[in-house]
Length: 73
Image (cartoon, rainbow, N blue to C red):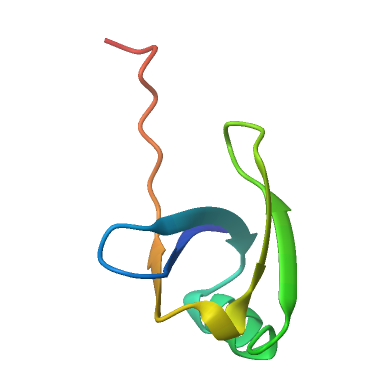
């Protein structure tokens, strides 16, 4: 599984990030397309619960995310 970062932009200063695990970017894109114009909910990495209507989002970006293990130095 690969990890993908999805960023939902509401305007130039306000956005929410979500991380998902999918087999490919094509499947991550399909998930975002299937969620279009409906409510979605998720808890982010900080434990904050988000509920948003994707109709109110202006831009959605998807990118593969490569975590860096900050404990190794």
